[in-house]
Image (tube, rainbow, N blue to C red; front, top):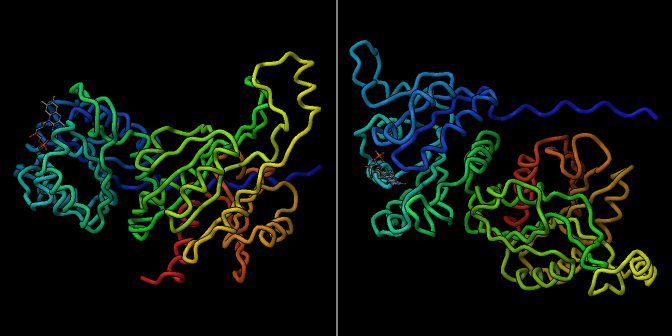
Length: 423
Ligand SMILES: Cc1cc2nc3c(=O)[nH]c(=O)nc-3n(C[C@H](O)[C@H](O)[C@H](O)COP(=O)(O)O)c2cc1C
């Protein structure tokens, strides 16, 4: 049988972009060489600017080597050979700024408009979008001054603030203060590069389901599917970066754990657990994206203890029962303002199956994606398919990164919400 050639992979949105990395004096600065190296390997042009404190904590030589560019320090701005002020040069050169880690001191300078370091002056002079990742000791983070400064920063146009995560800090405190992990910094930069700075989901509450469910025959055997959860998790993180409050209900995932930072996570395993969690959370949200791959059937008589082969065959012969259709249940309990997006994985001819499914399920939007073609499906970095909705044109979506697909779906879902509850 002749198969279509694999579609060309979409270009990396970070490739060729001019990214300024601003590093201030937090111990989390030691993680930045990994980020700089990853950006350079993805083809970005990277320049690093360090505060004097940062230069005590991480090597400017290492950063220069990994970025393939010289590294900028405070002393560099006082050169009699420079025709233009260095902070203005760097500010205008940057297409994107990654400010990580952001210390309490650098945050304070920035929100009060002080420019007494090269980095501080550059931040005031730049018009590029800034991804800012705070990092500090738990008590510092919860001190009223820092808290107030962080609140002020939320109102800065063009700034995407990433609050710190919980964890064990270098000062041996357990709590909030850990800088967002490098994998999340890279994802958030990619989001800024491909979809720009948007806070259009601010004030909205989104519920996303992701990953597979498992139905157990006995404690050692289950029926499931190869879903990794990547599509749902990236949709959830894209919404969080656009300002939404996100609840993520997920089966066992195979994604970067850092991609779950900043969303409220509800791990489940079986369809029954997913059903109960959805019943509890549905009344609290404005929109739902049902990306989980729910196993359709479960054993009618699961065994409490691991059986031998014969016992297993007997349990299977006892039959299977259908797992309730959770998308249909969500639609039945939909509140008047709620918008619901369903997902449908198909092999073969996608569109006719998708039309029938949309009619049966009654959701507002349905993304039907093939699982038997390159550029889509379980575990793929890409997705594609057809987006359908009652009364909407059927929209063909060409292969794109799952993060970009997440953003596109948020655009469509957000558009629906706006018609239901105009601001
Ligand atoms: C080992 C070490 C680790 C530090 N870690 C942090 C930190 O995580 N966050 C923070 O805000 N300050 C931290 N500080 C304190 C800052 O370096 C200090 O407040 C400094 O003024 C920050 O200046 P800058 O923003 O110009 O880099 C640390 C200091 C030291 C010596």
